[in-house]
Length: 524
Image 1 (tube, rainbow, N blue to C red):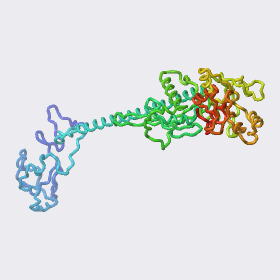
Image 2: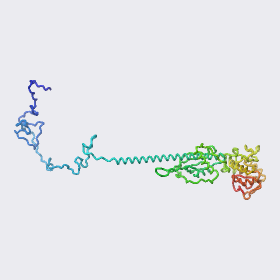
Image 3: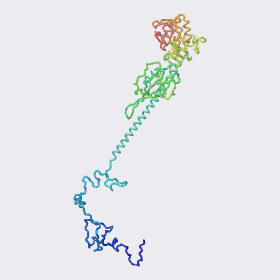
Image 4: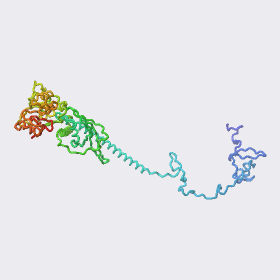
């Protein structure tokens, strides 16, 4: 609604007050309706009811504090619609306003009034506001001990982790080194075996086992132990290497196992494969023992060649290259066993395989023709029914004594002795015919002193040679052995044959072999 009055006021005329408006100047007074007779006047809604104990002005007196209208009360006398409630007195101990002085710090145990009561949770600070607004700043926590402990833990973890990694790395390094060296042993041993076989030596599983039981024979700190071995030439070998842990300051032993298998032939006679060690494998290396240089035979040669092959490999030579090995000058291995895996010694010619016999059993043998030792027997004479192809008038022997026979020929040549054989290797057919034609009648009658029973002669193994010149016979023991000092050949054989592993048969001055037994006699 517009504040325009109607009728409109004239220029200069003051504005009329609105209904209930106080005349200017002065505060606005509420417009009250007139009091009806007989009805109690109600107070204005904005007016507060006086307190029962409050002093009230008497009728006719001006209202306290109201100086604008003296003599006039803002509200006429009115009846109370409700009588005032009687005032209930307060007990002395519950006076609302006791007349006593409150101390500034009602809780003496509280050093600061602003602090919370004991047990009371202090108010939390809103985000972005500090303690200055809500009370004193709490004491700061010391964080440097925790930081120091954390740094110390990190340092220990770092050192321990690096130590563990270094130990693992060292373990891997020594396991790999041991594995490489163990494989190197197999390679060197294979070269040694092949080198020996290339000149007529036989290397058996027993020879390798004997060599492996001498851990001091092989260098570079690798010590070997034979865990298992069998006669067929299969071994389980453990290689040990000791190294020092730089953190724990103690020695550790690394063990690696391998399986070694010995095969026939000279190309690759030995194969080895690294395998998992058995659970019962010893965890300590065998003690160092000096090499048994007095063993002689294959073992000493094998140990010497293995070391040479190791040095050759370390110098960067071609792996598997054969070494120069002197031909065997004595019978090789067990002369009563198969010799087809051997090669003929230098100075002899390979005639292939033949059928040998021992104790009535067939024994395959490799036959070799000895150069420089002619033979007038039927086995070496072309056109004869017992001729062996390729003999060409030379003495035929087993490969096991081929080196010994060649060495005997060389020694005889140096001493000016001319050796000629009358019989060497014999076939079964030849031996049967000799027994049947025995002029003494012993063999047909069961006396095999001068002519052996077929299948039991050392000639049938190819390890015996009959020389032409000595012709004396003797007894069945070495005490009554045959001897012929007048013969230069017998004297030479009596003095020299034993150096190449041959002995005289007691009953015959011309028969020398490598068979052995009580009736094989040493030099007189």
